[in-house]
Image (tube, rainbow, N blue to C red; front, side, top):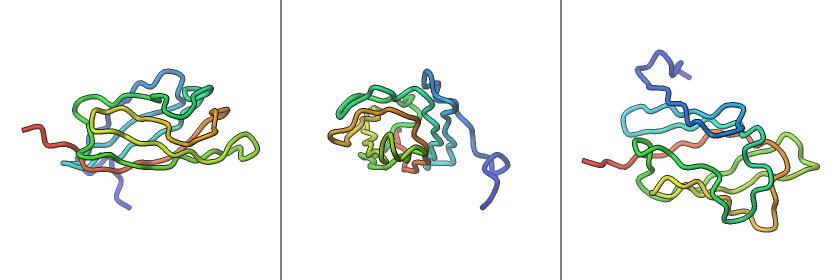
Length: 113
């Protein structure tokens, strides 16, 4: 895979409090999120907002994704929806986040012009 940092992609820090790292690469109308939640999602339950994307990274339509856990005894992977308004919402039922979650999420960005 091509190195994104040399492809003209712009790295954008998502500034999710208490995350180990959270950033996005934007390449034209494509966005790739890279998230290591660290402690940011601990205590979150179904329908809680996990984070909000900046206006230049809003998805064109609802994006459904999973994030995995390295500690299966504490939790399973979680399902998240990223809404066109930028809210990333935990959708897994009967789950309270107890650990860090990791993943990459790709989607098409809204054309605001």
